[in-house]
Structure formats: structure tokens, C-alpha cells
Image 1: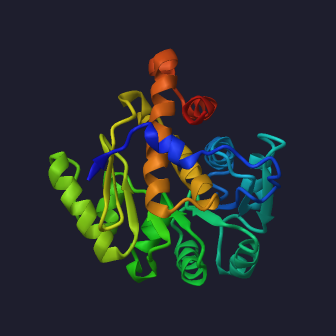
Image 2: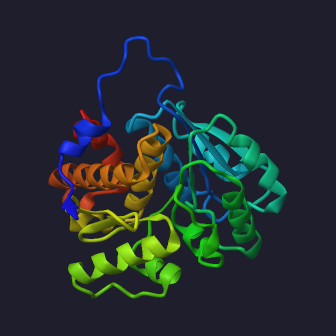
Image 3: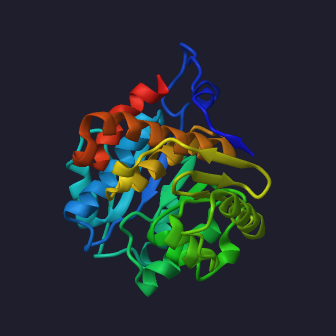
Amino acid sequence: MFTITKTIIKKIYKKRNIYSRKYDFGSLLIIGGSKKYSGSPGFNILAALAMASYRSGVDIVEIAAPERAANIAACFSPDIIAYPLKGEYISMKHINQLLKLTTNKTAVVIGGGIERRKETIKTIIRFIEKIELPCVVDADAIYAISNKKSVLNENIVVTPHAYEFYILTGKNVSHLPTRQKIMIVKKEAKQLNCTILLKGNPDIISDGENVGINKTGNPYMTVGGTGDILAGILGSLLAQKIDIFTASCAAAYINGKAGDIAAKKMKHSLVASDLIKEIPKVIT
């Protein structure tokens, strides 16, 4: 067990070769969104995920979402590539399109704003069963895999807060001391054969063998969307082919440190998008 420090940044970010080309630093697919989350929330979730990923160093980010959510997200920045899926929510009719979109991708993030419809849950499970790419399972996708935990594998990072962790494992860790939480997260990661990044104070990361503790972050980060920034950073690092445990530890540190920098200026006015602006200060 170790506490994550800024030294992990040097481990992740090295000087680039002058002959580097597009795609050398990864291509990320983000899957999420729905009609319900196609207004302001969908805008924040999908666009924030994409921009946090770009700011963390990945070369290409593509969003796959129901058409309204995809179109709104694409309006946020000219940097965002969005693939609109016909319909109001993700369903089994999209499975072949989603799998095709993984071609030439090096990682996936799934779950933000995707909702918990039965058809969507079925699609998430089928998609995860079919892919072999490193994958961040976040938000509503955590609820989906809780219905079939056998889809989890060593390529997957699950990023729950305490209640989502309860949904996934049946273990309520909300009021437990940190040492006890660590033991439970490590045990569950081993049993589920995946990496778990339990968000909290502190963040606890384990692949079932190793444990990293992240102490960056602050109470102003309770605002909605900071977890989506974390998922975007983590997806970016996985797409850059950083090993899953190291990427998870680094993402937790970067997200929390960006939040600390933002909180010094914004305090109670902090919003999730403030973190995106501060990522470059953390990683450079």
C-alpha cells in the first residue's frame, strides 16, 4: 500500500519523440448520453469527459451517443468528434455500430448519462462482453454490470462512489474507517477480477493485489460532474497505454489536484468544468 504523490506524473508523462504522429498517444471512445441527459446535464457529461480526456494527453476522442446528446456535445468544442446514434437511448440495435467504433481505438469509457433502462443495461453488458480494450466503467454502467458481474475482467476499471460500490458489491463502506475500506476494496477487486477506484476521502485504488491511496481533492468537489472529469482523465491514460493500476492511481491524483487548484480560486463557486482548465498545471 502506498500514498500517491506527484512523482507519478513524471512516470506517466515523458518527453515526446520529435517524430511522434497522430494516434501514437491513443484514441478513446466515450459511450454515454440519452434523451434525458441531452440538455444541460448531457452537455456537461459528454463534453466534459471528452475535454478532460484531451487535456490529459490523448490524441483522438470520439463520442458515441443518442443523436440529440451527441449533437449537443459536438457543439461544445470544435475538438469534439461525436457519432450520433439514432433514437433516444442506447439499445441493442446499436451494438454492431458500437463494436465497429472500437476499431482502431485503444480504450473506452462507458456510462456517463446513459440511464438505466433494461434495454440499455442489456446493451452495456453485451458490449463489455465483446470488447478486449481497456475500459472505464462509470456511473450508470456500474448499475448495469451489477446485474452480471462475470463480465468484469482485468482490462476493466470500475469507478464507483460509496453508494455505487454498495450497488456493485453489497458492501456499505460509507461510514467505515479508511483502513477497513482499504481491506474491502482490495478483497472485492480480487474477487471481481478488475481494478476498483473507490472515489472518496481518500480515493482508494486496488487491482486486488496492489493498493494506492490518493489524498488530493477537497470538499468543494462534491459538485456534480467531477467524477466525469476523473473518468475522462482515466480513459485518456488508458488510451495512451498506461497500465491499468498506474493509470487509475494517476487519474485520481490529477483529478484531485486539479480540483485543489480550482478550489483555491473558486471555493463554493467551483463547477466541474473548472477542473479541466487546471489539468495542464498538474501534468506539466
